[in-house]
Image 1 (cartoon, rainbow, N blue to C red):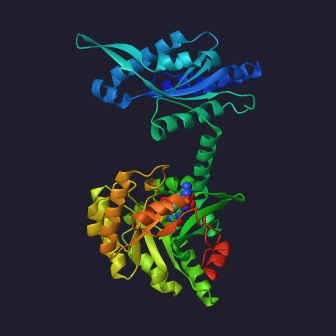
Image 2: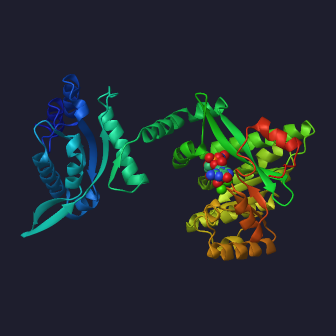
Length: 437
Ligand code: C2E
Ligand code: CA
Ligand code: CA
């Protein structure tokens, strides 16, 4: 029998050719059966795969890898009671339905399954742990596919976001994944339908409470709700599509500035974020220049914010980008300075106009004396080099006192204002003075 005919035969029988366990179709049949007899709510659904199985395959070969999968599935099967189900989706991906009161025990089992492997006359004992996503099936459950869908989301969180062995899925995780998917699907049309809006967060000089600038922050108006960038920017960055959005935000900011000037409102400099992923576009600086120039506003009203990087290649690209903008007369700011990998090299090599101190320095109940010394020195160096300094994420008076003490006076944060819709920001522009807080 040919390989694909054999595969089809197993597919029709809804079992996996290697382990003989139900495959996805067979597993879903079991779920549907339990839904019909009204017992499904007694179970926790699992999705698990084996940690480091790729390495095992490389080291011992596919054949031994298959053997490990078979033995491991037998051990898991031995643990299960008659009404419980184990399914094999393929590769090292398994699903299971285990009674709720036995779920902890099951997790402990999966935490490390011992397998004896014989190779060339030796036998090895391998202990194979799994990464697990789980979901306690509840009363609202109607779609059998959710047992696989929801648990696979939990598994992705366990592996790539929380880096822990077990994650129990929450509605927030499911919602987040749904939004991310829909962003990627709807991005182009969202852009052309102007579903992205720019909010402006004021920057205020704490010495005289005067508005001195603002940061443009993107929002997505999705089904009447404002979705924050933390949700939709990461998938766009991995897709390399974020640059279109960043150009869009810049264009909107330029248009707003132009309108304010036309209406006789004196604008302030607006900073716009560009993702490091955008640096892959070799014409980035030129395109930014063209957008600003075409809008007819003075370049002094725009500043480009970028974050630092440890990656050496990116570091070079970033340095070129910043000096390219500088030679075109466009200002730049280093965003989140101090959050990750800031170095003195950044201050030395980059022709930046502004250093934006990350909120992690002030986001504490008690300020550390070490931070105080570091900040004071960094601010001293940066100011001596002619840079402007701003601190972001400022919410309280004691934080203002602290950063004033180390030499920074311009502030962006909830203390003065949250990011504001454009109409509200225009009120601030008309009356640039903040009442004493
Ligand atoms: P970011 O550039 O560091 O922007 C500052 C973030 O801190 C904003 O979140 C702002 O709302 C928030 N924030 C401001 N003041 C406070 C405060 O006092 N307390 C607290 N807890 N938070 C404060 P937002 O608007 O959700 O933006 C998150 C991130 O998304 C931004 O971080 C930026 O990295 C990215 N982002 C926003 N708009 C764009 C954009 O147009 N393009 C790109 N590439 N990234 C953007
Ligand atoms: Ca920023
Ligand atoms: Ca920032």
